[in-house]
Image 1 (cartoon, rainbow, N blue to C red):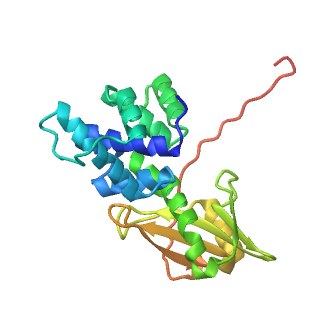
Image 2: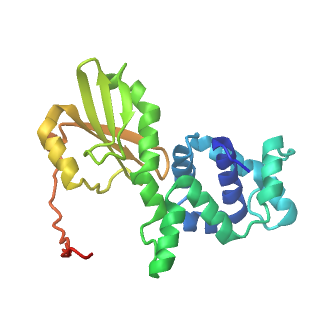
Length: 252
């Protein structure tokens, strides 16, 4: 069955309804609104829609589980929801978790396979990855047209280019390079790579650091043009990188 964005958002609601706190823990979320936010933005849906899908399934779940903590909406499931419920309601927790994570992070199944082969865990908090990546970037794409500095600017997603920023905004000969970061709370620490720092230093006022805050409840944002001269304190974090060389013989 080919699932579209609405199907995936609907199944995320079913997952949260069926597994509750276990689902939040598996996603690394500290509360339901953090889950609604990171799932909603990552799936190009509204956070409130994820909540509504969860609430829609609560009454159905309670029919088979009297101890289910929420009553939900006391009305029949919509046609799409009913079809998805019948197909996925018997999915076990681990199977359903992998499905939802693969929706949210397209590389998740590959990472999981590599982790199994190498006997290593995927150790980064899943929700944190979404907040600092896809969810924050999706938030920016939704909100940038309403930001006065970016009105009428075209947008190009360059996240896969490794150029030191996530989005290139342009209007005629004018441009901005925007790097997006995300925080779970209103305050916290963000990390800039050496490449990001270097590009920000080179283009100065054309570089914008866009920080999405408070995914735990109600996301909002702040912008820092020429971030290296904005009053933010950047602390170097030395890292040791091990390199290997191999000599190629003529017979190799």
